[in-house]
Image 1 (cartoon, rainbow, N blue to C red):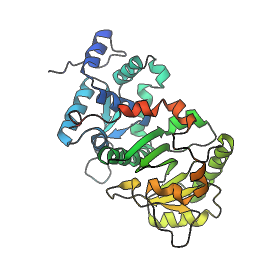
Image 2: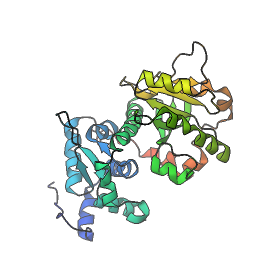
Image 3: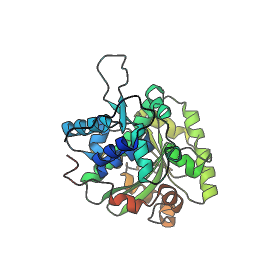
Length: 317
């Protein structure tokens, strides 16, 4: 079926154009749009790992979505030659369709095309891609591993809506594997901030725990073993459950045995993400094996959402 080309330069898309675009979208396409809305930018490779299987069908489908103006793209400049992959951002038509589908408005979604594209020139672009890559690994592993499930992935902006100024994590996640489950706040470290500032953020998480009466582990995802060692040396007291790991490209990524909890025990081996709660027995005993009610309420029902999270194999080629 040929793609209906929507004219460029329109400030808004008319009803006929919107209907044409909506008729072409699959449930998986809406999942792509929702993730771009919440997580700002995803690369072609990240979207392939999350929703597709092979590169060519991924590029073809993303090209169709771009022609329908539901998504748009940019490619970062690289100073040392070579090229970066396409980085995908939600387009105006995509935001309109999400709003219509959710019986809301584009304004209520918090979408503005200029703000959506601002990530392309932001010095936070690399950090955002890194945060998203953490969860893309978990998403991909859950697609292909029985008993594994990414139950929640909330962006920085979603976290801000829930917890306000009490704490500003890079993301919130809930990961389940083989009957074990952990909720966590993620601090994705690129090495650009002094470690004093990094450790200073822990006070905000302590305030959040005292206010909400929910103690949630804080995970530091670090760029090198040296920086991890220095960070751990600076955390002399751990009022919160904390774990650190060095960013890894191993098959299981952040789900694998790369986490070292604090407080430190002599001879403590690195643990899988889903095993971390066993390092904090008091926390494990006091936790309910559910996504916290505040999170589920703000993010919508994750049980309902997960029913449609993973596309069927026919769609995911």
